[in-house]
Length: 63
Image 1 (cartoon, rainbow, N blue to C red):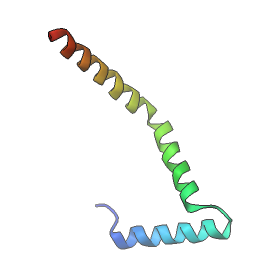
Image 2 (cartoon, one colour; image 1 turned 90 degrees about the horizontal axis):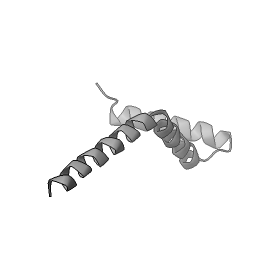
Image 3 (cartoon, one colour; image 1 turned 60 degrees about the vertical axis):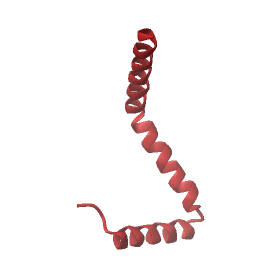
């Protein structure tokens, strides 16, 4: 089961407060977390792009 809206809000508020105390921007921190996740899952992105290219080439060769 996923987190409730209340749990998400509590976590976000706590992180924002902690970052503010440390003079960090929440948006910058969140952006960095997004970038980390993308880097960690880059293989999934690349596999999807390769498969997309293969499907597009197959379709183009049919016509």
